[in-house]
Image 1: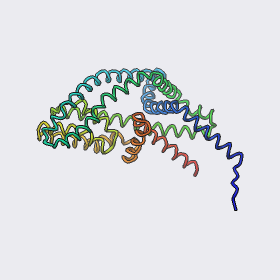
Image 2: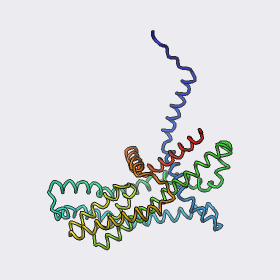
Image 3: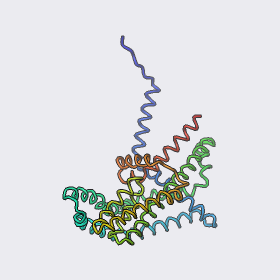
Image 4: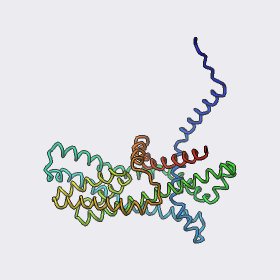
Length: 325
């Protein structure tokens, strides 16, 4: 006997509406991404804006002041770092075969190692320049994000009333609690991670300059950028410096290994507990998985927003589960 499967009108309507909803989300995906980035910016900057507001500075003026300082700092850093970074990286790539020959490695092994390092370091200045040009060329998207973040920061203190008026008191309080948790988690992770990357890059730069290792600038920037990748990032970042050290002399090579070990211990036992003690505590495995998925789905942008997206999803899911009990 054949069984009849009947589908109600409500099921069909729901399926159609759900598909239309997903299609609408896909159409406005760029706006959603911009709003999410603005939310992250709000979470990072809100503590600084609140601190300035305590000195009787109007909140909107505090936001504009912080924006001006950040934009001036970024512009100065780009103008100062990019030209020597490109020059030193090009010199390093041209001198790398000589360092490899001094190590006494076979030609096949040398070519493989050189190929990997060239692929890694050779694209660094180009990627940095490409991202910078992309940001400034796509001015509309950048301005949109900054405007979103500006209004989120301005209205942050009145958010509970706005949500209550839009969603009702009960739902408004739930959303306010979620946004508060997001602010703590995202702000703690982002500010802590940026501080950690800066300190690690600076510590490596000072150490490499003291040891007399050439190309200290690109090597230290590489170590700072790869700090976002737990466990294997510092190892990958230290490899070119160790090769240069041993290519110069065995003592310098051992000293470079000691420097990498010292910076790693400083990070594990001093910096991470102090800087990230109020942060999210995302496990290294979750971080690696999030970064890999972000890279696969959205490239460089995916890497940048991978952990914030995970944190947001985990907080929303936790609050939803709590609401069910």
